Length: 284
Image (cartoon, rainbow, N blue to C red; front, top):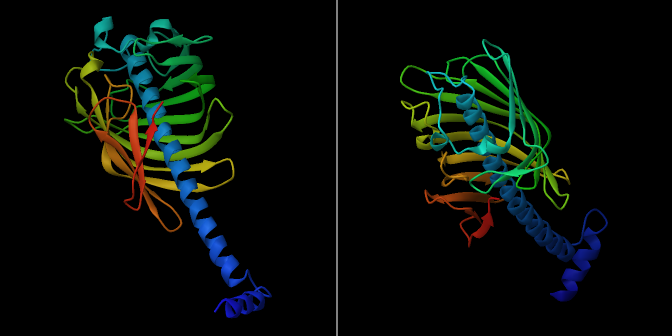
């Protein structure tokens, strides 16, 4: 059998890789694809978390500067996460729309929940954030959160209907660079529904959001994975991380699932492939 296999390998090498070498290469390729899926799944989870941080910043800026809607002014520190306590926020004009907002975290400042940010965020808003049809566009200028450099454009479009508050969130030209220089690109569209805190617009601490949609993540080598939320993600304003929900990532011949947990506020998520033993990752 061994001789026959060697002969077969030599014969097939004229038009392709040999039988045994192909088998070995296929195994290596499959292992490499699985590791790529683990890598990009982890990147996707970090992206989701950092994007939710941007959402918290937008909402707090709106409440603090009276463009959140529903008479949300006169906020005390206890009603927000106080993310902006060490940032310089400039709003122009103070009255009327559209508004241009600059949020400057300077050379680095740490909020009360322990998240460090630096650099600038620019936002334009067409109308109050909670008004149906309003649009907010966010861009980043040498901006970092938890040592990740954030680039790209996020567009929030208010899609609310009577009795509900919801937004479509579109991320374009996204790029996240880790402290070690590793980076990934990403784009996607998410649907955000506020499921708690709708009737208390001036109090962000009781806000909870449900998130569905899809995302595409590409690493520096050009490898791409597309993710789809299969169980709505949950983001509480009082928790710095997504704490519930599942995301499916399709590999070449396998499927990964990111599990953000059971609603416990922590930094932990897990990634499993084809139902096998999951790996634990830290979201920040």
